[in-house]
Length: 379
Image 1 (spheres, one colour):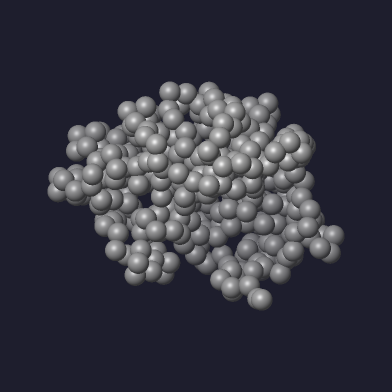
Image 2: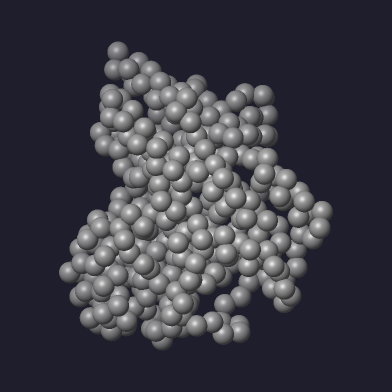
């Protein structure tokens, strides 16, 4: 059997990794400034993370949600304390798409409505309602297009209110910083306005923190830069540092009932062990603060790189925008300088999503390589 060929691949085969470094099958070392789509939060193969999962695997790796699993409560308590949402409820699942599916489903249950407001260039996943709320026709099949979704531009509250006044909207879903879309974000006034409008018109406010959460922007959640409180917050990527796990934080105003949501694998013992280890390391190594510091350092360094038109994002969720398409630049970085970076829907933008443990020394390697490439191309 051959693999279903849907991924364009770089000809690099990672076989081991530690911290911010990845080693390929030929023994070549690479600097990882992408973390596999912002998944690697605490660094590859962190010893506490590895030990926690190994210990759990020796005990019990999995049982379904038909029995007590105290690790789920431990994870929920730690997450509540670190995020500042200790009065919220946690539903565990396996991925960001699944988190957003359950967020949207819960909003529809709560309001008895079905239309969703999403935003231009958004990305919320590749399944059912999640992909329907993603602004990319190329990955929306006819079965997904049956969903009722209205896409609006960021930072236009008037258009949002016009749609809410129609009375059929169950939720607004938005990323505090767009990931795949290219690091655009709403203003504080816009996000605060969305919160107010949701309360006024009885829609739920869903904040998609799948990529931006878990300390990446210098606060535990990116929306906390805007002093807002969503009804539901979706999480995944950095939550497990590579182990499949996701979830939604749910307002205490939303009541649970048996069977309302469900999953077979979500919140399993191994996933919880991974999630607890990640939170342990984030707290012990002060990685949220490091993301803030290193993000400021990146901003400062990027401002002095010739050809960088604009720096977008916050903390260690950054985009460097150029006045040319960056595909060849990214190839040069990976093949000649051994540095992983990310792309986006904005063809002129490089995404920087390193482990939150990254150092100035490691970032300097990237900026020196970038400057060398850009200067060489101008000669």
